[in-house]
Length: 164
Image (cartoon, rainbow, N blue to C red; front, side, top):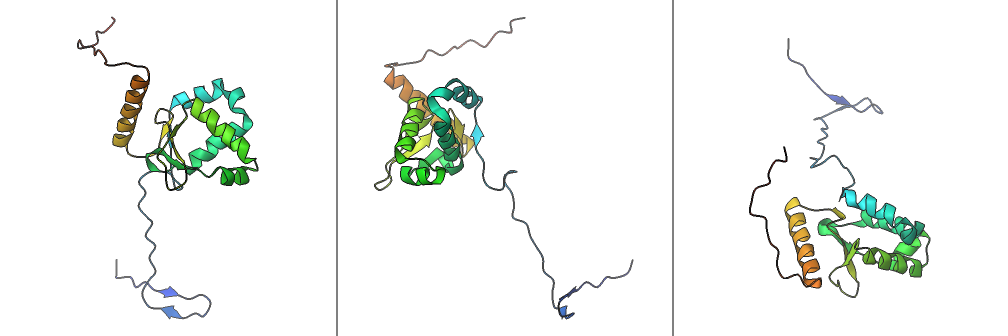
């Protein structure tokens, strides 16, 4: 096979262009173009069992919060802005967020300037590194233990036995 010469032509003018245009697609780290969120099976059960308490507005806010989730599950929320985006009153947004906090879906996060922030419970879903997810789960477990006045955990030192 002989040598091939390649060129580009401006179809509007017919002029031969120097060089060639090359498109290099950005490297993807996963299959999602717009971002991702790993959600636990528990989330579906929680939503289904509490659908009346959450209501249509609470569900809409939960899914909107999923779309606004930042890495390490941080959520900076402006309730008035969420209300405008969903066509809801700010009080309805506030009530839904309070309900989500009561269900353990949202946790209070650090204060950022004058704004309140929240975190999606790492037991519900996670956006971030697997290593930091394990750390966040461990922190939540320790907080629950402290709140319940549990001072220690007895670990099973024997290997699991096959029930055959």
